[in-house]
Image 1 (cartoon, helix red, strand yellow):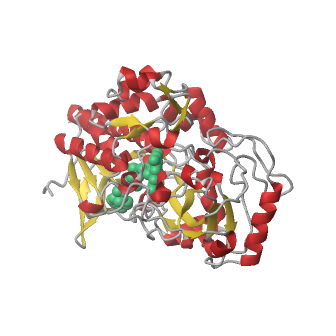
Image 2 (image 1 turned 90 degrees about the vertical axis):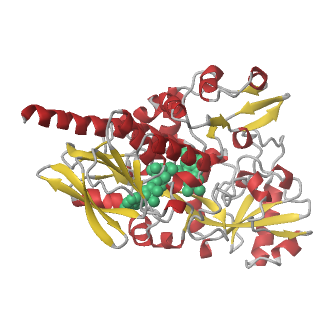
Image 3 (image 1 turned 120 degrees about the vertical axis):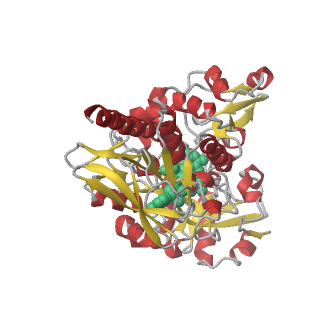
Length: 504
Ligand SMILES: Cc1cc2nc3c(=O)[nH]c(=O)nc-3n(C[C@H](O)[C@H](O)[C@H](O)COP(=O)(O)OP(=O)(O)OC[C@H]3O[C@@H](n4cnc5c(N)ncnc54)[C@H](O)[C@@H]3O)c2cc1C
């Protein structure tokens, strides 16, 4: 740690949004300090835990090859990659957020996504094709789907390693176990940040602060206050340090809360996943995303969602909440031996919890559930399955009739043993509520005017995601708004300095 206690720009947090902001501010010539609440071995925030899937608008495979230069002509000839234009991205955001996403913010995210990816690459971030999760084999080619063909090399671990390396190269100071606890204001302008480190409090002088310290998902009290009491029971999939500090600090000096405080991103995760993300086992290994091919039953032996409503990209972020509502916050994904080989890789990991039975009775006898009702529901489901061709690579319309809820795609009878049950509970990823920012990342007050010298990026930006989000938009939003906030903060501070020099 350096002894310097005065910086042009201070960035709070050391995840993707924060480091993009720090690098961008540095590019503009600012002297930058990054404050990270966690120790060095727990740095990188939620961004470290991701699969690195990053949603970007692109016009053709040529665009993608600009950020994935290792793709050979031979590789390129072996893929089919539908274009995903700015309009497609914007429509996806609007569709899953039921039209509530703030157009100005969503457009900024979408329209700047490609240039920001190119910028990240320029700073050493490596991207590759997301073959594993976003493509399937068809007519001898890898067919991509869902507008998400790019991921960072070695998931979030690789992303954060590369950003930290770049930050170090640029001479950005990073203090660990250094929590920002208060924002200082002189008249109407930011003039410093109070930091707690080793039980001591000190003030770092600065006129530009970028809050990129996540939302409130890891704070049990905030979670139950904002989302509802049942959310105390949710598993935190990522870092334990995103406890809403940025929101508290900013609102204490007049910033406006913004976005869907009653909403969050949550998924069905392994029932035995750690209660908070384990930095020794990152990489999103506890999710259980093949549920569209399953039926999910609760402890009472009842189904509660249309598992096959859509591709998992468009339903996974809202079904966690549905699982949380079930008795004891648990559900069982049921598969038979026809479907088991089609499941995603996470089902083969040693961390996966599952039960197996040669017959359905043998399976159900191992589960702490209403066994009679469980078997009855499976039988009723089997009877309700309609004909048609089963095809997991597209919405096949193979459905049930006469059930509540119906299963509207990928309904296959559960009839060939052995049978499998994967217990899942709700894992919260991040909460949607944040601060009100304008399209350059300046934090706004209730009167819609900027709070001079305060900026925000990443999960801290409220108003983009409501109800749900298109997978891969979290990292992209962090990068876009991080880059914007970084350059805006640096220009604000350095402009002010220049002004000061001129006046003096
Ligand atoms: C398991 C998992 C998988 C995911 N997969 C994907 C994916 O593949 N693609 C995608 O787009 N999104 C994914 N997400 C969502 C994604 O992680 C977030 O949207 C994104 O990383 C948020 O970035 P951020 O920089 O805003 O926050 P973070 O990366 O969480 O960084 C916030 C940082 O602030 C620090 N901090 C908090 N309070 C303070 C304080 N008071 N002082 C100093 N520091 C503080 C924290 O320690 C942390 O390092 C996933 C999330 C999880 C948990």
